[in-house]
Length: 507
Image (cartoon, rainbow, N blue to C red; front, side):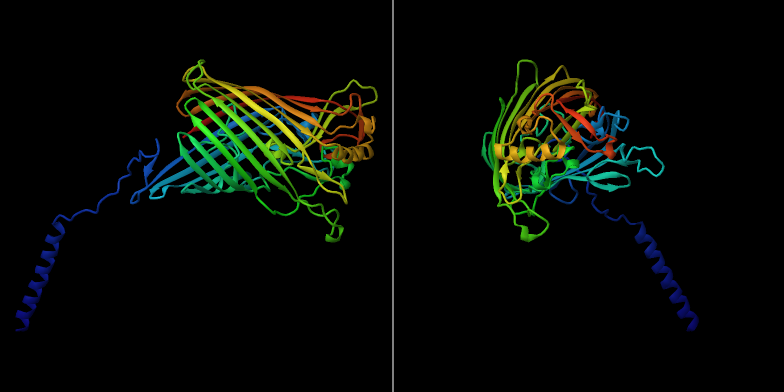
């Protein structure tokens, strides 16, 4: 019996093993594979995220460019060592940049739900930063310039990060005040796939009336985007005045966002847009503590009109873009927030007794002195461009812009009192005028040999037109950082010519 049981058990095990082997040979239904599908709802480049009804597009660019005759990647030499025009100034500055954007869109019963993010990593050539004395123990160093977070020696930026739903926009997106071409009417843009290059944190609502007519209302961050200087002129120093800083920057904490309203008509013939902004100027204290008191807040404003004409007889895709802005106490709407707010450019002179010439100017939203209220600054200007496509490969833009800064009589008396005292202005109060104009004209040419690859060159001529009386001089203190000695300098208009060369691969 024991042997029989063993035989039976052994046979059962064999049968089980055999049935298992046969079962393994039987065909098994494979799990369904989720293939990536093209999403045609929102244009080329969108795909459905597998397993969802959300469409996604990934794009960006890699860029390398070099700008000559400036310490900035793109801007003219307005101040610092770039404007010193001596052995400390860069003859060129190069930048390498990698940008990626992610765009997701989902159709909902409330309309499209969209998220968009644009991330950038940049590496900029080192710039001189030090005393320039050449002496043992001097502070001569090089640094990679930039204001974004530094990662591995470069700069990491979050240019756009927003959600759009049911007409609302939440997050960092193009300002509703701005035009579709932003600060670049000549099609010279930073972005790969976002809206106008003018990103700012905001909560906005856009009403679409059809046929290209929209109206937008927005509350946007004013701190980094819309504020230039609020100067306490009572705290001005000779060292600051020499750089175009007409007082201590006395901005207080945030109290109110900038309030924006705009209306846009965007149709086949072109575009018309009108925008208005309200900007709160909130200063800190007159002195070091609360007991010194403070000036009351003053609201400034800005208004803009913009026009784009398309379908020109000069060729397909050609356009003329024009923007005009007037502001009172909201200067950043005229002079964009990527520009300097303080100007000190140096040049030669033929004036007897003067070491060199200098152009000094400063941009502000308001100025005040201890015990007095804010005096708002008036600014106005325009930019424009003609954009022409020679063929599918060659493109040319001719562009220009002009801006004016005007201080009222009270603000002028505050600033001139500081300049005459601190810098010994030779012409005295009668020859003192802190107003100035700033203008640029140039051309940009690009070649696209294959789709997505662009080679470009831009030549720009820039003028700082200061308004101090002709032949006036100032006595500047030693400026070790740019190796300028304490001496007499002629106050004079200054100009700069810059050249940008670029290679960019879009994807």
